[in-house]
Length: 369
Image (cartoon, rainbow, N blue to C red):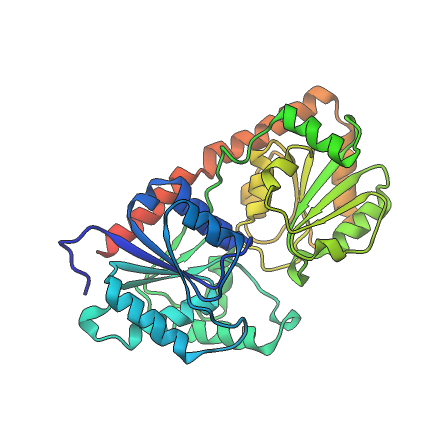
């Protein structure tokens, strides 16, 4: 059991520290809120990643277990167990399926007196596992069978909670905590907008779509390409790992992995999410809105909750619905477009701030001690 006389301390365990949504959410939470003032330590199962450096720059202790992606390694369990025993945290919080299993295994090998409270984290909703290898299907199924073992489960979307209950998750305690958006990093900037547009040779009055997502089956880039084929006067910035390998189109900027996403978003007018399945709380969608972009999103995960009445939510795998939404936005007067951009920013300011997310995490942690 944790020592209640000591201050709250948390070890966060995550699969990796690249530029994915969960990795960004964890890093932002620790570096930009008071949660980072708690005694925290981050453990990454695999090594490297831009967020590992962000954490170290913020003087947050980070350990990498050097595991190989996709390769179960019992030595990693023992290394994690040894670290937990030495640091004696109050809470261990894991992020995503593989880290959930690793933390449970590591804590299970410790003597009962040395076991901290365990909180699992789920970041997606209804995954179509047929699009991936059998390892993911087995991992999710095992997590479902063991889901009563942790002290609590944090899910970042209501859709994710519903989807995981449907596949057999039966946690002892569950909290839905939406992601918090860094409103300082993601904000409109007219000067930067003009600068970025000049860099890409984009006219001041051209309509620019932002699409921020790694190239993956769930993100459905084919949907985006179909939209662009029918909207030749609209340009899209495709940002994310693998997008530099998308088919070339005259109205598509294939930017690949970028560390300056907030800057790139300022050049855009519309944030589009084309996900076909699996999305929980879309960071990309909410960050685009915080930057003052009008949202168009497929009805996957909690996109309807994020967008509210300030944009459009359309069926997945339905490019014509996105095309129609873009055409509607193009046709509105300039003052109406400005109003909608301001509404998008205001919705994130009201509902999805970092301070709200941090307060929810701390409330859960304190309730377990």
